Length: 157
Image 1 (cartoon, helix red, strand yellow):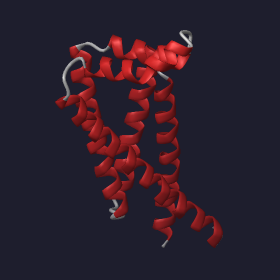
Image 2 (cartoon, helix red, strand yellow):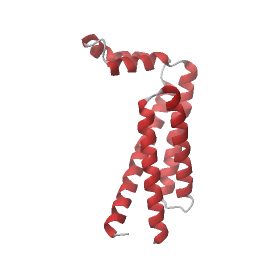
Image 3 (tube, helix red, strand yellow):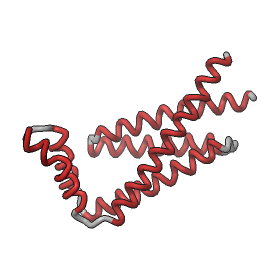
């Protein structure tokens, strides 16, 4: 493998870890936010964010989707989201730290964890057709590929 390609893989690896760390942080913050805010805060926030757009264009697909999502959340779903966001975010942090430490078990653990995320998110997408799940799944697949390439590089050195 050329030095340029090795450098590119290392750069992509570090950038993907930064992305996963930021996603993990956003998920933990989102989970904490959901846990401490009043039950109707999601609906009120969605209404505040979309009100002017829906006043101008009552058929705006994005604003209507946000309102539909906000109105569809019930207390059981809210608890699920809290647990999911906090757990998913915490697991992201563990994976990122283990990979930064270049622990030998970090690579297979990370790939297995990310593959579980891909499987769960794919199943959830089949149920909800939420495009955000496709984006998260694509990101996880990309990170899996980069982690495997990085692992191969570190084994050679």
